[in-house]
Image (cartoon, rainbow, N blue to C red; front, side, top):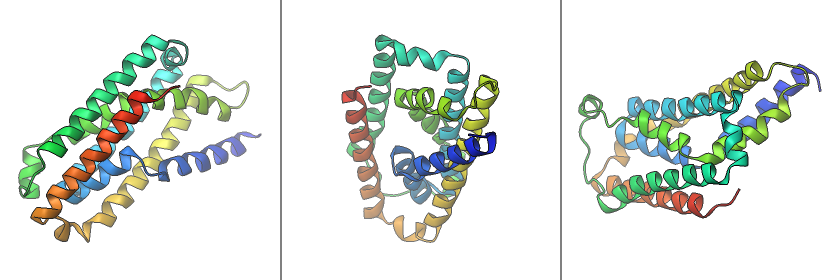
Length: 206
C-alpha cells in the first residue's frame, strides 16, 4: 500500500476502535454528566495523554517488553486491575447523593486528568495493542519512531474529537441527570462498570 493508503486504513481502523464503547467512554460520559464539561475534558485529555505515552513506549521499544515478558505484563495487568477496582468500589460503596456546584468542583479539582491517564497507562492491553497494531500501518523502509508518533497522534486526535462530541451531547441532559437519586445511580453504575473491567483485566490472557 502507498503512504496515503496506509494513513487512510489506519484512520478508519482507529475510528472504529474509538467508537467502540469501553471504559474510556464510560468515564467521560459519567464525568461530563455529573462533574461538568471542564472536568470531563480533563479526563479525556488524561486518557489521550496515556495513549501518547504508550506510543512513546512502543516507539522506543519499551512496549515490546510487555509482548515478551510474562512478568512485566502480569505486573502491569494486576496493578491496573487493582486501580480500576479501587475506583469502582469507591463509587459503589460511597455514591454521592448531591453535587457541589460546577465552579466548586473545579476549584477542588479531583484530578480527573490523572485518573484518566492512569486508567489508560495501567492497562497493558493498550501497550500490546499498539505493539501489534501500529506496525501493520508503517510502510516498509519508513522511520519507525516518526511513523509511530504520527499514527498515535491520529488516534489521539480522533479520541479527542469523539470525547468532545460525547461531552457536548450530555450537556442538554445534565440538569435532569444531577438529581439526587440519579447522581447515586450514576456513581453506582459507573463503579460497577469499573469493577467489571477490573475483573476482566485481571482474568484476561494475552
